[in-house]
Image (tube, rainbow, N blue to C red):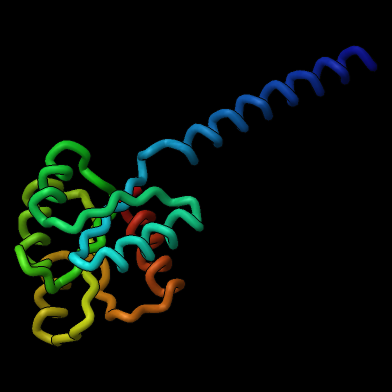
Length: 151
């Protein structure tokens, strides 16, 4: 009886080890890459640190065209896009991103809340529209919801 119990315990330990390995692989995979697009380097740096602090990987971009080139190859799960940028508006980026990667969840953020821009972004499929300055938890909640809806 004791030998059978020990064999069962050993099988459970082996199963737990396998689950631990699988869980570790999921957490460290780049399956949930978040892209950040803003022309302000300090915003990119701060958001990059915020996401890193909660275990999320973020790719940062200050140039909309370089971001779109990246999207053509990598298809990020979530993209945070600033509305006001000198080279291309965030709404134009959103439109192009929809064509390149329809499954990418888009969160629009801006320092200048405009009801028309908000309505346009949300009607075009944005997962969220957030005003700067934003609360870290508000942003993280929006990102988590976007990630959850992508899986």
